[in-house]
Image 1 (cartoon, rainbow, N blue to C red):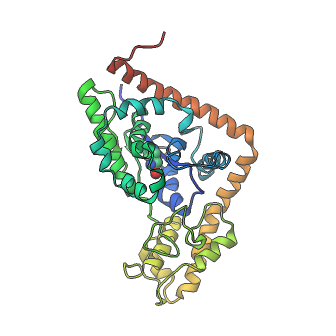
Image 2: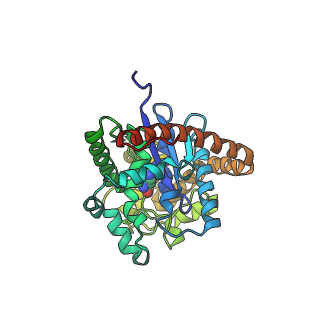
Image 3: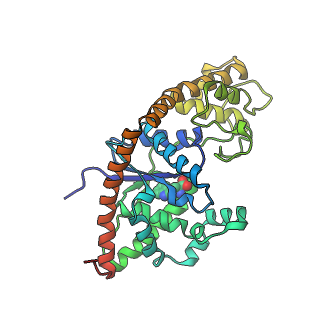
Length: 333
Ligand code: TRP
């Protein structure tokens, strides 16, 4: 029987506080996919362990990420929103797939090379096999589509290679996932250095708008955003700061660059920055309110987590069992 809806899988690491870059580049678009696809969205807490976490803070961060998913509009009744670490099949399949992945392949991962260079004091084996755990995440749910940013493309490719290799040996066990090529989320850059991607971990707090920043903070950060010395609101490579603000403004209002240029024709940077700040604040206020309400309603959130963990575990177990059988692991009696 043909599946009714295609399956879509994605998730974010549970580290730091989400930024409007994460929101406009991913989360906001995920919300739009909920009707068309059967969606699984994970709080990727196992992946976060490749960097040392302070336990109490980590627990909070993971819970906040879950609440932010829901506050942003991912419906825990319609989608499966769950904690990766609550579904043991991830770690189990990861081990099996480790044995079908070559060190040569992992050595080529650019993110591993970058991260290893940046954290020389903690180049652990988890960092090395990070892409294999990610492959397990995706393959467990037989995902057809994975919406990922450019920085994760190589990880999706190795996932496809591993799945194909396994299928060649054992038959059609895994669905081969495709990158989701729908409307691309905007790539939001740092407000202080528009050549750099906006990052959760930027040392300059003015570089990043966090989803939980209050209205005044958001407006202040937009006003201080680094721009060129010209005064014309125009999109272009020579104007990275203004173009970035236009991307932010455009992805919230749905306006094109041309429309924004016309709207701010002759009005100068001050007015434009103020409008961007207010638009971002208006977009985030209802999300922040839902987030606060969710955190207060502990029983509701606990129930969502329980139900969704069970949904995810059920789907994952089915694939894991199939894999175990294929490779000849005996069933526990
Ligand atoms: N590596 C992804 C990131 O940092 C997070 C992630 C983990 C993921 N497992 C995934 C994304 C599976 C998509 C599918 O953004």
